[in-house]
Image (cartoon, rainbow, N blue to C red):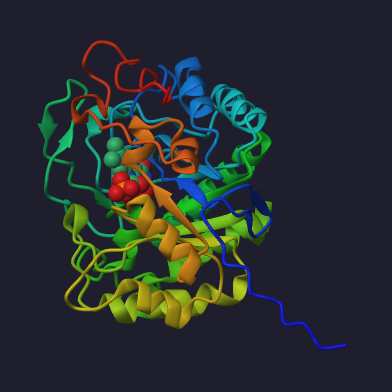
Length: 365
Ligand SMILES: Cc1cc2nc3c(=O)[nH]c(=O)nc-3n(C[C@H](O)[C@H](O)[C@H](O)COP(=O)(O)O)c2cc1C
């Protein structure tokens, strides 16, 4: 008898995969997208239940950025996860996604200084690593862009309190039935404000060297893992991005330090917004220091994504805008149907009818 050599199985976008404890029936992930349609108590509404139910064909849905505390809010009408009403709302969302066969993690997002005070509870302060405004413009309650607040610098003791808020949010997300959480360390929000040398001028153990600037994210990931298990915790990064006033002097040093510190934790996944930079390749940096599962994102076509999972630099690929206008993206991919175009005017609410551009994109017929 001759020994038989087995052909290696090349994964496709439709091949199931596990990210830590979370089983995905395919590798097409819905990227987190703020859509600003939460209810008056910052709770998910029935309309949001419909929106996520329509997209349950994704192997994994990452929810829109969800705030762990009133102070974490920066925009108008994003959902939160610190009250019973909010937990109940999220339970309906998670149930709908699970009934459709999907998995769902909650993206935990604290805006820090990228915040307009008029968008949040008047008692909620805008805080950041240092008292430096982010610049740029953020839409206020009437949709008109405003200058973000000048934040108050957090005290060292207050930073532990924020870590605890995230941990409680993870517990709340699990009690609402979500499969895990993703720590939003990208896009110039609080964790990235601590990572980046230009927004973090602190002189305590959270500022200065890369080892100090990564401390908040490392502590928060440990706190999340302690609460719900490391295999249900992911995190999202975008090394080198200048969004919301970010300008790290040496992102390669910062993120190499971060990845080395969290690599032994056996987290569920790393979610990379892959920018094509001239200075360095963020994916090469990640591959050099991160041994765990990777979800790759940014301006991908389905063909790009298919090549990525087949060739192996990532285990799954996330799509943002395609999922806005194609609730049945996975079925369109499976059958080779064309993709519908997005209407940018209705990405965020404010045009009078929340349903428009949200739950009224049809499936392909
Ligand atoms: C309307 C909209 C809202 C977004 N909100 C978030 C968010 O809450 N959290 C986040 O990490 N990224 C957010 N993003 C970025 C997306 O997750 C994604 O990285 C980006 O759209 C690039 O992927 P794409 O080319 O497939 O759309 C948002 C993008 C869009 C279009």
